[in-house]
Length: 139
Image (cartoon, rainbow, N blue to C red; front, side):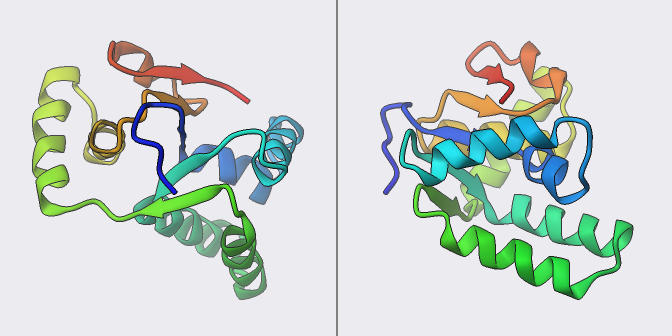
């Protein structure tokens, strides 16, 4: 269930990918996801974030097994809601991209956040810091 009063967090692709690719922040991200799974907080992400992660797994690891494991783990995260951006949200993202000089993926994230009343993004991408209506946090 999405709480439209801003108490949800949006999870960026790099948080999932840190664990999947066993990068330097994998432990921090694992602890973050344990909090989500334990019900400490609720979060949303979008279907295009999931696609991004699956494509990255395919390119970097070339492993259908890891893809299945990732998709299965997403399905089991009870505190995570996956949303699909509407055409309106995509259209608004082009305005956000112009205003904040963000690429389409990042402006689409901000537009989704605005649509669902989410004001906090969990991400390692510092370029979200220039968008004053959201707060970027790291795990």
